[in-house]
Image (cartoon, rainbow, N blue to C red; front, side, top):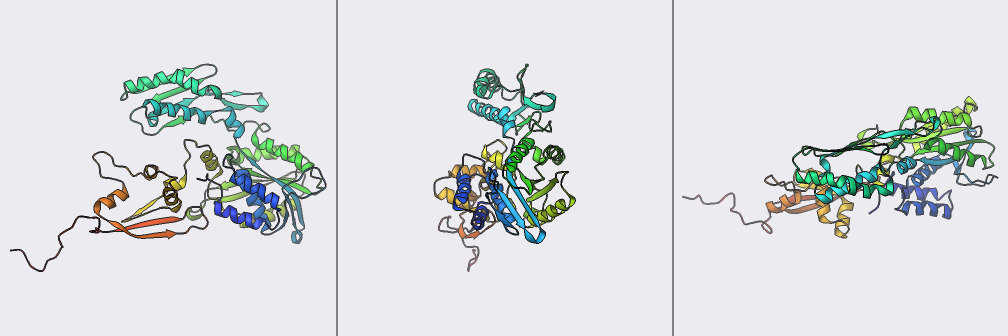
Length: 440
């Protein structure tokens, strides 16, 4: 089963095929290898493929050319009709550093797994985690007050397991567990009336400093690489969202990028690349580009790049997921999901779900029980069955038609099962509704 991607896998393959017109076999092989590596988030590679592809649709482009320096960069672009020439790199910004310092997701997973193991419903739990600002004033960041990553399992077993035992002894009562110290601050409430788990904590992915944050680090690193490329013309950076909270905060992003550009005389522009989800329902997600010019650059250069971005907006492929969702799905976080498992439609005597699910079931890769769970096929005690296929079975209905609906721009085609009946081949015999002779 393949992990979630930013762009549809079919679309990615199509872009790879197109990019072969200006990329070498080894360059394409590197992209393909990264996409096929299920152990890593593929966002950096997907963004690189997408931006290269979009530019190639209307401009002359070279990937990793020799520009006379020690470093090879991603893009050398020319548009002779607009007298535009520039070199640029592509980089993706994530919150990986923040996540490494704050093992919140690991803590939640260990805690809920332990609750399940002893018979406590995690949906009845509310968590509150404290935090402190750490570091020098110019490098402030939030640090959650949790046990060290390597000690989480031991801590939960030693400190919190007795609390879970109290809950199992009196499951219909409310319970609270609390610890507040210099290094750990956790509160856990159990309420049997609740059905969905929730958590509050200080945001640890906020960039409190203008210089010590993932965006500034990415700009500084790439600015040095661009300087070593040997290119004397206009140089810039495509700064892509890899699930970073700062990339989604336009105000903070503007402040950080402008501060970085003022410090960098060799970096002429930064183009922030994000995903907007305010579009219409049939095309909800779109790629947005925001230009940030070095104040040392001329207004004419800014106008050239504006025309360039206008064309780029027209040619860039639409994503199918948000970067933050892709990252969460890759990490199997508690708020992530795999959409093709849970997508379905019900209309009268027909049921529609992704064709990939049927393929996985037939290949023995997806258990039927898992399919039932993800599609809410359950039978509450004393209530009407919600299991569509079981209802059709019990009514004596048989499959009358199977229809496949292609979705070429997504990775989920649809299959619809239509039922009709009752069919005497599988249902009890019945008395005809009309007879030729009336009973006396």
